[in-house]
Length: 602
Image 1 (cartoon, rainbow, N blue to C red):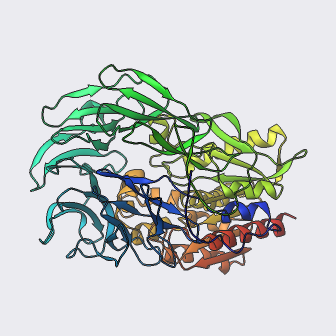
Image 2: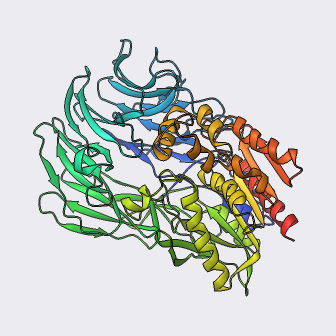
Image 3: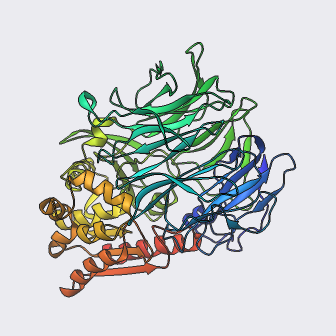
């Protein structure tokens, strides 16, 4: 077990309530490692009270904090030789900036690709011998991809108005795989493999003909010099699963992975096997798939959720694991804890209970946590963001804080969520927001009928897309909710569309079938602002003033309408983007939400 160096936060005092300890306890992410120097690793930790990048030399045990910014840093990677740490530099969380780099051993930061103007990131692939492929996105240019070679100016090899991004660079640095949505469907990418000069070598598009609305994703080139096999994800059988595509011969090799739910994969370092990540019904597990024998062998992990995993050159697997009851740990298949943080440990919480509820679009999976004692309890419906995401049996300090304060917590994997098949995810079209709220309503009725949820004290809450559904639900179901807590929400869909980052514009056009000018009735039906005058419950809203995903202007439009009619509401604005990487700021926001709920629910 290795411990990161650094001081323990001075706020670690015995009298601190458990819910605050869960946020303040130092934690670490899964270490990334350099392909050609596997003893050199990079990981994220909040050991200083802000999430930053840390370098770790496994050979010597030395660790050091690599980045130090007021609003934190989490987006970083290593060059294949381990000589450089690359990290993305934006301004106060606005996600608009440039790639920087610094020597692994420490030293000054410098622009990693001189000559490229700031943009939103759209993928990065660092090759050997100084070649780099950078994906960019701006409102003016759309998606662009540039190749930069050491000592030369970057060269643009791709441009399109629709979203696109860098997938991976082949081991020998000759081929680049990209994901693109030139067909106009931002939910389902097609693939293109190009030479670094921009010449197309191979294409794969499952959105055409009889396979309309099937997505593809790049999982990675084989880690072998000269190998043209590309591991990809596809949806041809109604779920995500891996396939090997030889881009030179065109051969597609199906994999005999007979597991329910979604399946992803990455290469073992010698290219002979795949590490399978299997997600099903809000939990995940690992398997090893031998490509020669097609043998599938379970990699033992505890029940819960694996948030990330990597196969090491020596054959072991390292993974980040947690459950709703137990905090995260970086573990190894050797049985050891790979990486640990100094200071206090996060207290555990209560386990989740699974609930399956019949809804208008099929069975809905919900996760429930309850405090001690007999109900009915005030109940928080904590709605996940995305929307193409899902809640899982993983440790989360936010829901645990509500349980500590006597609230039951219900999390709903509504239509649009991942992990339940392609049809469930793709059901989120045109009646955006209203579809998810139908599923949430079905689970709400079940929770009340079950006796644990107090019908007079139901809280609708969430962040990002969950914040959007909160505001939309308060307006379209005003009699159902006693309170609303919306963090970084979409509040005025039309203004949000015009102000948000370009990649999200493409997603909104896919979800709603066009722009606000082309399908105004759909934007109106799906916008919380349309129903703001029907809101009766007290509303608490928090928003980042630099947020490029749910921009502040459209939040202010909604707040102005609440204020104009004297509706009960409070607004908290903070100087960051789509959430905060500062622990004290996160604690402050949760404290404000709990205080607002306690005051208005009694």
